[in-house]
Length: 62
View 1 (cartoon, rainbow, N blue to C red):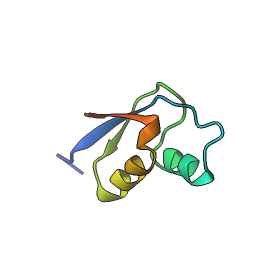
View 2: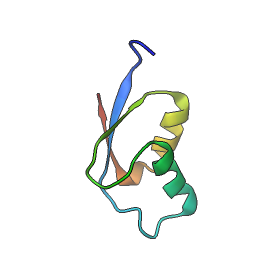
View 3: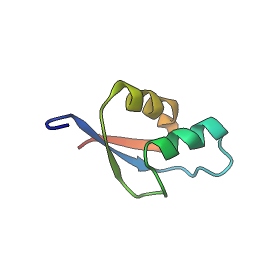
View 4: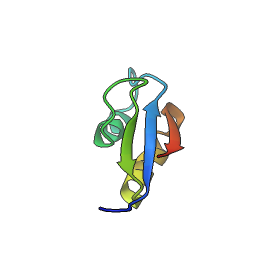
């Protein structure tokens, strides 16, 4: 989608010992490992997943 707003996400806390749903959200956002930034489109679906695991993420405008 041309011109879509994007958000840069970085995992700053480990996924070890987290709830299955929280791990699934990280996986759904394309996050693979800590401190590796991922850029995703700023859609309501992605925002919901970001809000759910916001305590583990650093979120920046891309």
